[in-house]
Image 1: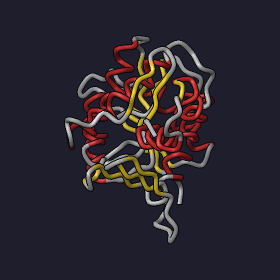
Image 2: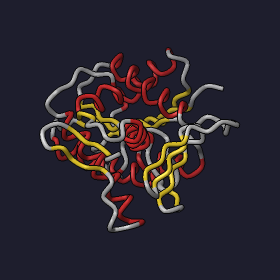
Image 3: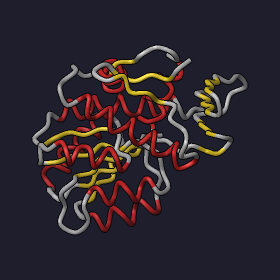
Image 4: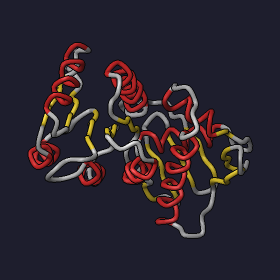
Length: 231
């Protein structure tokens, strides 16, 4: 079956261009020029990935992102005409996995879509007999089943958050640099905004853990270098 990609942008020429490239890559695009129509489709369909424009007239992309995250955990890529860090940070805080500023290279967007889908599907394989368990105190992450619990309670993570936590658990006792995390997640050349991007995901991870137990502080910041979970 073709992977279903939701595309929401109130600029038809951009939405149609993305749709054309998606079809050329053998994806099945669901294109909407109005966010209200997209919102209705989100409630009725399960997609493999969503591409959301931030600035739209009726409902903005941030709202759509929040609505998706209420129920689904497939990757979300945000598009914005604003080259502002605060927009990027706000979107990531709401649960977006990646961000691209307009104008963008369609080939780069396709590469990011493929990278997000690879990671999402890798950690959402059917349950297997063997289990790749990573643990730290009351935190347990199963890479095979793509589940994570804290104090035996479900810790609901986006694909990006899950990958970051998995890397930190695999490298317990070692400092993992922001640059290393960024390269692992997006395979892009590291740039100065990358540290902010990673820090937003780390903050989101910490907030979700503290919702379960306010005293938990498993992820340590090593200033100027990166992050680690003590062994």
